[in-house]
Image 1 (cartoon, helix red, strand yellow):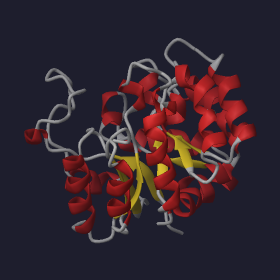
Image 2 (tube, one colour):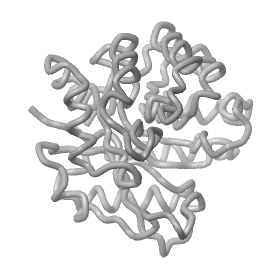
Image 3 (cartoon, one colour):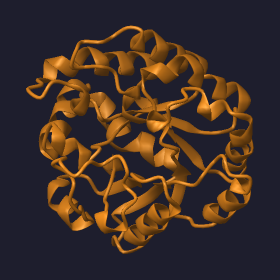
Amino acid sequence: MIRVDAHHHVWTLSRGDYGWMSPDLAIARDYKLDDLRPLLGDITATVLVQAADTEAETAFMLDVARASAGLVRGVVGWTNLAAPDAPVRIAALARTSLLKGLRPMLQDIEETEWILRPEVQPALSAMAEHGLRFDALIKPRHLPVIGELAWRHPDLPLVIDHAAKPNVAEGGFQPWASGMARIARETLWCCKVSGLVTEARSDWRIDDLRRYVEHLLVTFGPDRLMWGSDWPVLTLASDYGRWHDAAAALLPVDTHAAIFGGTALRFYGL
């Protein structure tokens, strides 16, 4: 059985486009695929996700994937979805078989409803037309509006990154829980079981994460959930193995085939 890490990054800081990364962060250094390989355990395939809002980042990740000897099976890149020529750029990007989707960095955009702007809609339609997936990097503030996308673009496959980043550290459960339940009920979208430990306290324990993971399982079901490490951002709160083992302990064994592999394989077409 193929085991998939459905969400990780690599980066090279010298390119100078990781604007979110302050120099004092512990992860403010280069991370390469060779740094990740020894940590993977039984993971045999990965999805590499953008961490900078530039097309140079997309080109860089595709080069990494091509040189990965089959480890990186898919790339989620970036292009400016609000640009007038976005549909043309998307059509060109979609011709690269390793590119599986695109991700605007919605969490960093002050305007919560940015994704619903009229100038963005042609790009979203082009993504659906060319078979690309949408990774939604959102926070709980986006949940009341993000569902509008399903009505406007019913053919656009979407996965919510990091379970929309609930405030685990302070035990924030509502309105996150009801918002996620509504999306699970009213759409066919998927969700990543990822990023939870970096939203938790620095001394987090498995039980801190339990009700969030259980809620995702009840609402989305295993066939719409996929596990991701969010490495190396993960290392701000945990090591790779600890998070993998925590997720495996929180999720029933009979869901592992889907959540640690099958859902990502199917959703991204790996």
